[in-house]
Image (cartoon, rainbow, N blue to C red; front, side, top):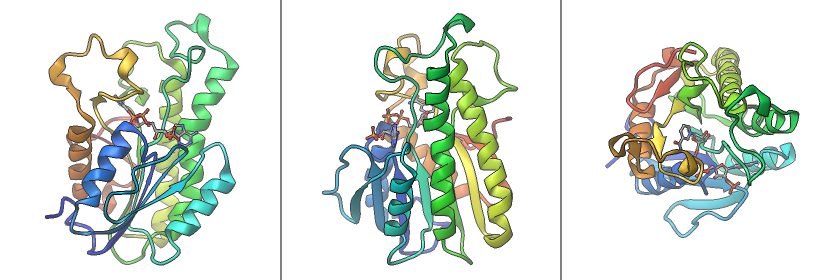
Length: 248
Ligand SMILES: NC(=O)c1ccc[n+]([C@@H]2O[C@H](COP(=O)([O-])OP(=O)(O)OC[C@H]3O[C@@H](n4cnc5c(N)ncnc54)[C@H](OP(=O)(O)O)[C@@H]3O)[C@@H](O)[C@H]2O)c1
């Protein structure tokens, strides 16, 4: 059985952030998918390489050299069909938490969130997009967030996270335009996974209704379904877990 039937057989896949909640769930689903031949599971910390078809490797979004090396290794034997960036941060340690007020804005928090959530995926695209297969559907997806939508911002707060995801959306749109010139069958997209029960969201979900809090497996399942539906004319857009388009 395949959940990615719109892609060619024998897909070569890379997941950046495969050690994370959503990335790990995506890894487990894709390792079980009949259309997938290889998965390059990349992150800073160790990922489960005992799954079938999985080769674990290291990548640090703060280190462009590690990104370039990981891209070369992932495409060493075959071009890539699917690249999914599931890395990202909302908080880091006790000192770097989302801002409730403008009083909490500071340079370190702003630059850290921009580095990991926007610049990191852009550098991943720089090194991975040239390694994608031509003449069949390919997808480069990066996990964004609905709170990165400027038009949808009604509550305020979380300045750095919101702005880093808005920047990511602009980077993806710009990458989509350039990439389509040589890869007309490609899709470059941002995806919102819903509110998902992972280490990233855990400190902030106490008021999330149970029915709105997805397990990583449920979210990954939804996202694979959306990826399967996306077409080249959707490239540059941001899509939620249910397939609906999110305004920028
Ligand atoms: N959970 C939610 O409710 C939710 C909602 C909306 C959007 N999202 C987005 O979904 C994505 C995945 O989130 P998650 O909930 O699965 O979080 P998670 O479980 O905390 O996983 C985050 C991943 O990011 C990787 N990462 C962090 N910093 C990195 C760096 N400098 N270099 C390389 N990898 C790095 C981590 O890997 P290592 O530490 O091993 O490197 C880990 O694999 C994020 O982009 C997040 O913004 C999540």
